[in-house]
Length: 308
Image 1: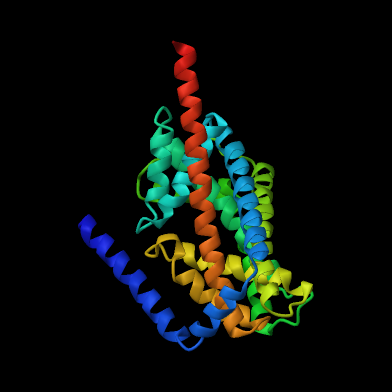
Image 2 (image 1 turned 60 degrees about the horizontal axis):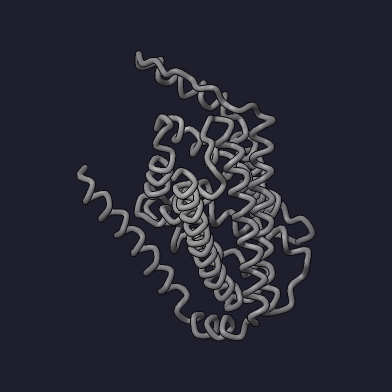
């Protein structure tokens, strides 16, 4: 299938999701926009700090993970490539993320960069399923029995994502069935993957705290609902990641959140906080990208001056 047709299909599917979401929430939108406009600046600032802290924890975790595979780079260069690749998710098909990293680590074999990205994805998904499962289990919340039931497979999948070696052996077995030989690379141990997953879990708790802060500022909200809100946020993120046609899960993540958050809040507040958290995360990603671009640029200029 031609590349242009694949991109057109991605754009078409994303547009369809956004249109369907807009039609379903059009009656709630005026109240949601009013609730968002009433949100105090300190709440927005606090959410920005929490989201930025979460992204910096993710960066630190990625740097540690990448170094185990020989992808070493200065902190400024690592941050620049990491946050540029984050913005690359918004390219239809999510191909931008890998392309940016391949360019950043040009001296490393492309397969190694792809493997590091796969392992990061596995650790991030493990953390997302862990947070989703814990939240849906209804810790401190009188959750619906269906949501509680969904927590079991989420927690099981979280463990599976921490087992890259069995996954790669299975893939190798499939290749062998078709007469192809797949050379298995050296992979981190389960203990290392658990450490990487812990890093992404901490980042997830910070992002969940940002959404909780927004939602609690719009109306009465029990602290016991924090696990559910964080779990709902990451369940929406999982669905958005699976929907590869949607750049950055745009529209898909929002649809899931708007459906889940009314379990603990009003529908208009749920929609308002959903729109705000998307805006805050996007602004934070762009700001961190600009900051690391500037730092990396200054470091390059200093290195050139020292060489002269």
